Picture 1 (cartoon, helix red, strand yellow):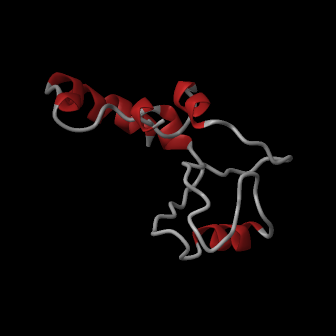
Picture 2 (cartoon, rainbow, N blue to C red; picture 1 turned 90 degrees about the vertical axis):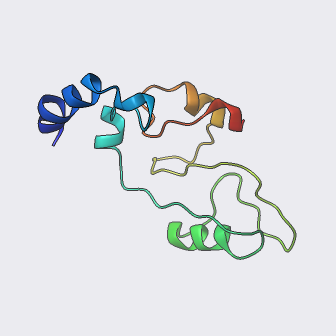
Length: 105
């Protein structure tokens, strides 16, 4: 897929300035990134509980309660040991599979 994109699609996107009115060219981390699930919803509807259930336990920063408790952007991925990486660090990482606007931090 990458070879086809690089040889056929990317030259056309660059020639027609596609990135100026829509999305920038696809980066390698986007093509080769792990599958991802996005959880969105109002507070106290069970997002953190659902993630904890899927993981078989809680994750660093998980706080379950009746009032708004998790008000952060969190990207949870597989690792041998649980770690917390600040969002600003992810924004600076060129290998991160998502392009995140620094303005959200």
